[in-house]
Length: 60
Image 1 (cartoon, rainbow, N blue to C red):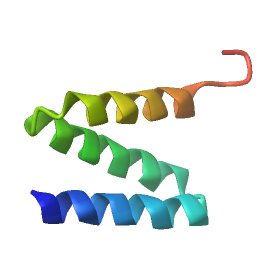
Image 2 (cartoon, rainbow, N blue to C red; image 1 turned 45 degrees about the horizontal axis):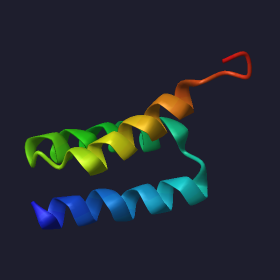
Image 3 (cartoon, helix red, strand yellow; image 1 turned 90 degrees about the horizontal axis):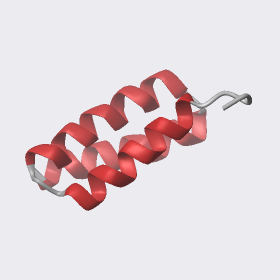
Image 4 (cartoon, helix red, strand yellow; image 1 turned 45 degrees about the vertical axis):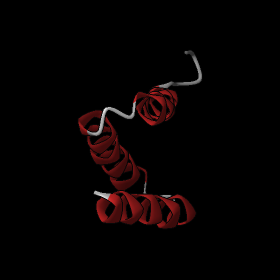
């Protein structure tokens, strides 16, 4: 699981630089699912906040 987690985190870093929002979102979802399976709720909460923030518009 550590290898998969490292892969997702590395991929997210690269996607942030290229501004590929759709793939960034999907990768974050998969990483969040991995954290949920590992019962790592602190990291899962961080991912959920990032995902929620990315869905916000200028009106809220």
